[in-house]
Image (cartoon, rainbow over all chains, first blue to last red; front, side):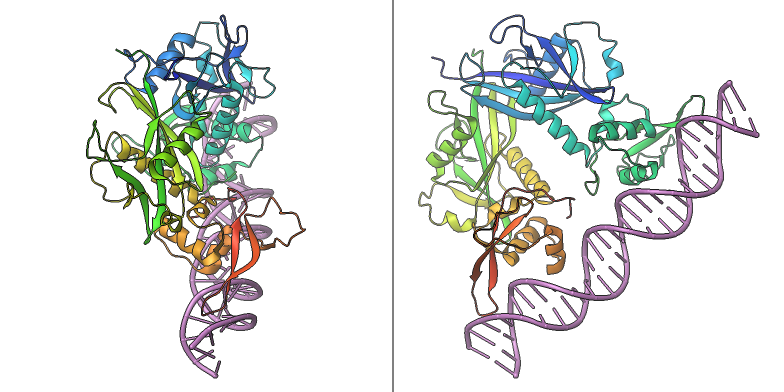
Length: 229
Length: 229
DNA sequence: TGAATAGTGTCTATTAGACACTATCGA
DNA sequence: TCGATAGTGTCTAATAGACACTATTCA
């Protein structure tokens, strides 16, 4: 019997498409849980990985070819039951990326599934996904986390749709903007970016058949003064 | 060279005393980091531990003799550098308990130290403590977490002092009570405890030389509608 | 010039917080 | 009855949110 548990990293990679949060899953070629859908994951390589985040990025790169815009540790799932091979430790992560960037990645091994109504999954991956979605919804209510579900430059309306889809609730534009507390920092070249600014306004616009909308970029993961959703 | 990392559990056990958050530390008898102050921690025993929380409770019991009122996973610290013996994984936890219960525990191996102004600690324990304190302060701003720094029964004034000490800011009584959103649920025997109630009023009082104060008990870890501190 | 969406200002309803008042104990 | 603390009500200042108005593009 082993005296030290297996240590692996799992990643719940989420994206927003057609108004729904979706998660990257693949079908396992080998046992245990052969032919079950599963999250991307892999063992820590003590000879290669310089940190646990490095493991997560390496696993994602190898298994899906994708590089997320955002990655954070979720929680560690561990115990004697979750893997039939014995006591195991899975350091679970949440990753976010815009759906547009998925199209570029070729490898068709992974597919995105709505986080609601998933079939049975391998290991405790269903629980990991539930907890990841809860974390994202919760954190979205008081932070700029949803910005990482969009491309680097986005309009305020796109951001508003993103929040609305996460919460399943629509708000008026002025409500949304006052919630963000946007002080439209005209981040002109030369001026220093104010740390307090949640979003940075660029001088680029997205054209259409209407009035062009200003493009913004997120400054950093910033927290609102109050939760508001 | 090992091909799988060591897996241990560390616990940041916090209590509130003399207006300061304090953390349980002991001086290491053996290397690495001999004679350094360190958190209680220990390896996962795959033959004994039924879960990672079980490991945390076992380690706390063995090393300090204490049973916390509250325990939650904080974050997993891992990498090749944190332990000179090689790649290691430490699943860090936060635990809370009232200072009054510490006096009962005999074993004098552990001592409580203010979380500010600590000397050098073993491993990455200083970082674990910083992150634990940040988690507690943050979660206190929108939940009843501080209740677990008090005995099971407490007065509203005691709870107010607890919040004030965590945030280093005083408020008026009515402000505090409106923040909690207390609907004084006179939890008379027979009536069902309303899930929505944040605190449950008992029919016990704490006497003194003034008007006696009603004793409350926390219902569950409940979140406020809005962050407010 | 009209349709469509971007962006802003104003007004109101809700809520947070300071203050004052009442209540209840022991001395 | 007085001092001390518990508990509650009221009034005001701050804020969130709905609505309406203006701005700017293309067809």
